[in-house]
Structures are given as structure tokens and as C-alpha cells.
Length: 187
Image (tube, rainbow, N blue to C red):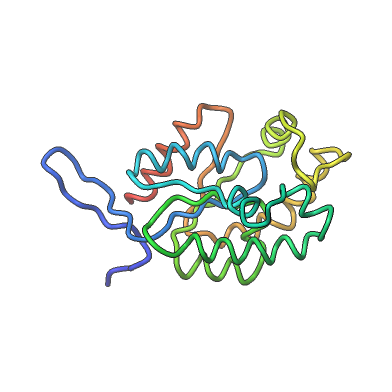
């Protein structure tokens, strides 16, 4: 029986290449590298890349921080769900989602039904070090990143575990994580 949710392999004269026939959606905590890894993965797969947070900001005409401040998280999550649904349509692409996207029941169901989901996972200390480089995350504003990320992980990690694939990210270059994703997609 063939699982239509898994990428197929195409034989070429030199090597087997992945045929991506559905979106590849990266999920996981803030700071795990969904955008930077996603861009590299898209290049390797020969498909386009899109960051859902960038698309949400374009659609709203506001930054995510401004959306949270002006309308609240529920409003943001509803817009996020609609944007991700739109991004999943059309040609296969790599989609980086925000950390809370997959936690939303409707968004998660859509991703699991129509895409190949990959949970990028990293230790809290790695995440905290990465998120401390920039000050643009509403859930961390004026808070201890280690505590926030630990608390979020307790809630979100069991939900992220529903993703099709689980890939660890660490302090090594993102190209190594991309290689691990490619191996998992080909398996």
C-alpha cells in the first residue's frame, strides 16, 4: 500500500531525487530555525519558500507585534490559520510557520491533511540563545526567555509530536539539519 502523504523518489541517471507533491510545513518553537532552515531546504528541493509570519504581516499591513498589541492573540491565530490555508494551496512549497500555528486545532488538522509536517525541535537553552538575538517576539516581551520557552514547550511539544517527521536542531550549522530533513523525507 502506498502512503500518499509521503514524498516519492524519482530515479535519475545520477541519483534518486525527491519528488515533492505537497507542501512541506515546518513547525516548532520560536527560535528553532524554521525560516533559515526552510529557505535552505527549499533550495535543495527546488521549490519555493514562504514564511507564514511574513505573509500574515503583508495581509494585515501590521507587524505581528502590532497585531498582538492591537487585537490580541486570538485575532492573530485566526488570521494565521487563514493565511496558512491559502499558502498550502497551489504548487508545493516549503512553509515556515509561527511557533503557535500548529497548536491551533484547525490549523494543525489542515496541515496534517494537506502537507508533510516536520517538527523542528531544539533544547531550551539553544532556543533561548537564538531568540535573544532579536527583540520582536510578543510572547517574550519583558519576560525570561528560558522560563517562557520551558513553559511553552510543556504545552506545545506533545502537540508538535503529531507532525509527520521529528528532526532535532542543535548548535551545528543549519545545513546539517537540512541534510537530516532530506534523509527523513527520502526514507
